[in-house]
Length: 315
Image (cartoon, rainbow, N blue to C red; front, side, top):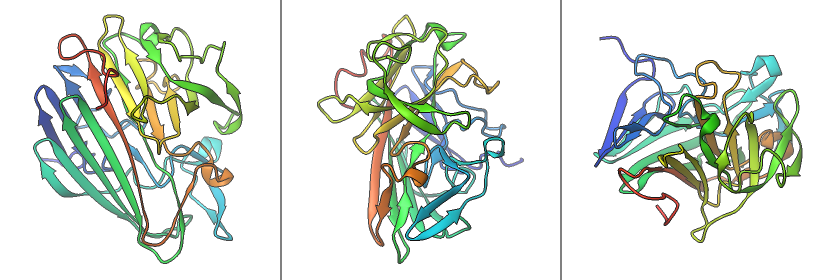
């Protein structure tokens, strides 16, 4: 039998939840609860497209010209978004990850990112996926294994699914007061208050025709310190994606330019730093030798058949 493009398929289950993590990139291929797709994933026979479920490390989103300064040196990364002359979504999406711990409802994978052109640092990376009654939690840890400080940020690229033909009639809530403006290369060029604009989703409402490729920040958090983005069908089914206080940014993407995902699902991307952070320095972690940085996010499926509002209490 031919190997799957995404490598070994690692299945988790708890109650009515089913999850598949993949060896290539250590990402999420599929997640379902109560027989309903929570994520817009991809088949085991397919190559991951449009970043679906991938982990983004040691930076999320884009770096202008693939060039940044750190530690008194200039670093130049390969431009893997050549049409916009950007380096995008880190260095581990197509690397093999190794299973370090596994049980029926929990798995941990690890990967060592070795020095390479543009990122001459050594990182030990670990991602832990765990299912609980309320849903999925994802904990990511990076350890600086080198002998000098290194820049670090991380994110993830899940697409939340709906039971609708398009996301236009789906109800979205994004608890953010500010959005980043972007230029023709999808790089930040300012920030504005969302109040009164078509990007103000602080109160749940239909997405409509709004095109989203938008980084939100100044997140309003609940009593447990988490910010929650909600996407649901008019019948109440859907999912809530939460982020901890290490994630100060959430990218929301309706996929319009990408035929395989265009407006059929919504990417909600947790990010510890904004686009172009390695250039600007905003929210970039300067990870000292031997130090670790851990961040956590998760998804709570919701629907009358299995639970009430996933935002009613902490996961």
